Length: 337
Image (cartoon, rainbow, N blue to C red):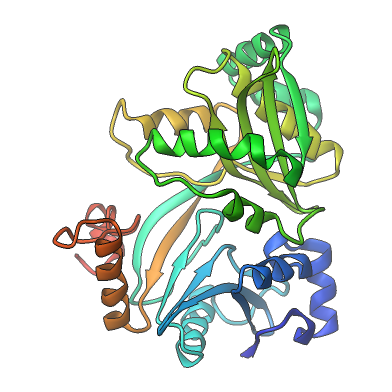
């Protein structure tokens, strides 16, 4: 197994394969973005697979976020589980105290001794014809898209210059779900050094903003990273925006589109169930995968959890991440927990 903390140290033949076929998280531009955020990328590779981890450190706490599944460039060799087991050990030796997956990741396997929950992503194959893409969209969504078009929704497509309009509706959207707001600087940080790999779509009706979306992309795949809308947007606006985004990426030669994030067994009638139905009706294939947390140093992770309890103003309420909220449903994946 091999390790480095700089894209420039990756062997040239491997970099060539990453440039040609891997997603945005394996590109030089993404490392430049992460460095601007005062974080680092670690690269771990074998003769068959490579894994990238974004590493955050605050004081003595050091965590790794896996925003992508491993990129496999040679078939055969070690199993994916064996590769991930060794990768977790290497991260531990580099001082990482726990490792988590981001919703953009599509892991088909997980390391031993992880806390695990099933997840997935709806993936659209953009290499098929526009006619087939349209045919795969649910009839209700097609009607909504037509309605948005008839309403003369205006789209603005761009970069950082659109943040002042996008951030307020993003915070409004997350606020409706009880999620804390993020500053303009946070979103600007996501965009630094990624001029050709991140884009914002905004939808307007009679010059009034209705909805927006932020997307990471390269030639391999586009990710619906963030979505936002006002409380009562013009009917059909978000459907229309996303359909136009799908066509935009297809025209650019992007091969796949990910709606990012899927939770199994949402509560019937819940907002989450509605969001998932909304995503699936665009016709993508649900690719099942795993979300996991691996604790290289359980004590350090407990300290982090307590710090989050204090930050959230709930010092006596146990902090739970997305994994904790689900693992009891899946004892077969978690050693009978």
